[in-house]
Image (cartoon, helix red, strand yellow):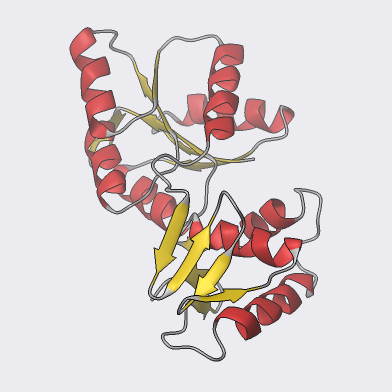
Length: 222
C-alpha cells in the first residue's frame, strides 16, 4: 500500500512514515503545499494523509484543488483543531475522513486501512476514454463498439489505468496492483504486458491512449 503524507512537522512525519512501514505500508512525505500537490498529482497513492496547516497554503485548499483535478484518492485530514466548522470544511473540500491531533497511532493505521479498502471515490462502474469503454464490474472492454478479449493480467492493467485516467503512474504502483507488492518492478514483465495491451486496444485505433513518459511511468488518456 502506498501512502502520501503531507505534513510539515518533520518529527511527526518521520514517526508516521516509520510506523506505517512497520505495517507494510510504503509512505512518502511531502512537507509543503506545493510539494504535496505535485506528489499527489504525479504519483499513484492508495491514501493521502493531509495536514490542515501547511507552508504555502491550507490542507483544505489542497484537497479542493486535487478533487478539482480529478484526483479521487481517499484523503484523511489531520488537524490540531477539533471544531465542527473544521470538520465540515474538510468534508466539504472533499476529504473522506478526519483525525484530530494528538491521536493514537493505531487509530490512524485503522483509518488508513479502511480508506484503502474503500478505494478511489467517485469512480464509475463504466469508464469511457475516447471511444474505449471499460466495464469495471463485468470485465468487458469495447473500442468503437467492438468487443476486445483480454487476459486476466491485461484486464488488471487496463483496470488500473482506467481508475487513474490522466494521472502519471509509476512502475511500482502498476506492478503492485497487477501482481503484488513483492513483485520486482525492474523486470521487463510489465513492458511485455503493456505491449500486449497496446496491440489490443491501441495499435489499430486513434487516438492512442497508453503513453510512456520516460523516467516517470505511464499516462492513460487522450
